[in-house]
Length: 412
Image (cartoon, rainbow, N blue to C red; front, side):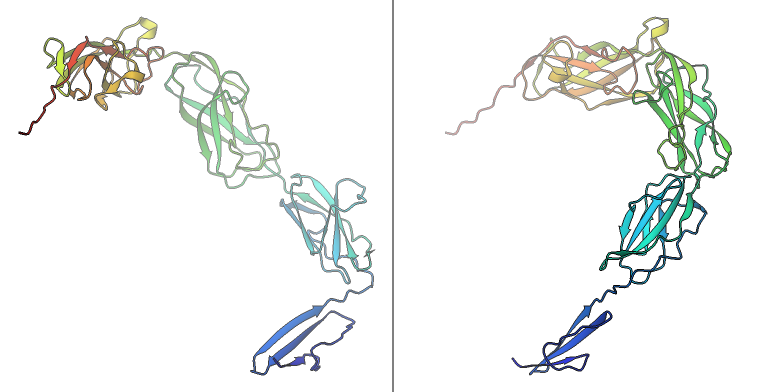
């Protein structure tokens, strides 16, 4: 294939020799006999052996205050420079080694300490000759000041409360610095129930409350919230408040956000004790039934009295009862088949009060032999019963389930 060539220098050969004094771009157009043209470009970089100039126009300006973090340093391009050495330090003495080397005319500093002052300077480097310029002017800047959120006083819960009940807690948050406001709010104050006066993983989270507004330097706000104490507790505890609980607000001090102890004595709320007190079956003749038959299960649920300190009214007011069948005379959830999904009960039950349930169930069509019907109240533990969670079931007398005779068909 035949080609013709045309360079932007005017040459028409396939190759040219060049030795420019400055960086120069070259282009050649190659055309074949069919008129198809292709353009190639190439730039020859020429580096001066002249010493680099001193960087100027450094930003941020000298003495800048409240500089945001991260900090962006920049300067004007220095003549004959291909690299820049960036120096950053605190105190009177500039380090011998640069903090960073870059080919750009800016550098971003991460992880500097808020509210601290820093010095900085830049040197230009001609990488071809290794010549380094004198230092630029030394400049300083101070990072932005931060707020400091603290819980001003111990939170104020009631002196005494019952387990499982709602309590009101009051507390006050202060921005403990006169130099910086917070952002636009959005942090949370979280409340914990502690076994001591130290917040740790063993403490119980009670809830969190948002602060929607900014807080001025030395400003404060009063907050309050309703939280529910856990069931089944008794004794002396601490309510602790942690402001900015999820670290939404950058602060000058991140480890002083937890209050001192707000003491509270928790008394055990007398728990209910739901039990199936009686159970009877209908549709079972002589304690015998056929497999697959429908029988009636009738039972009574009672909130049993166990003494003044361990007998109480139910609180949730809704739970489910359930009927099972098994070969054991004591209910064992690992060896029982549910005959109902759940029988809904609504309404609280005072001590010694009862209610009755009656339901028809179908015996499984694949079983035979001696079985027991079990009636269980509060089958999914919707109602907290303290130490009485494992006595919710009662079993019927044994019933003999008879297999149905098999039907055979004969053809003659």
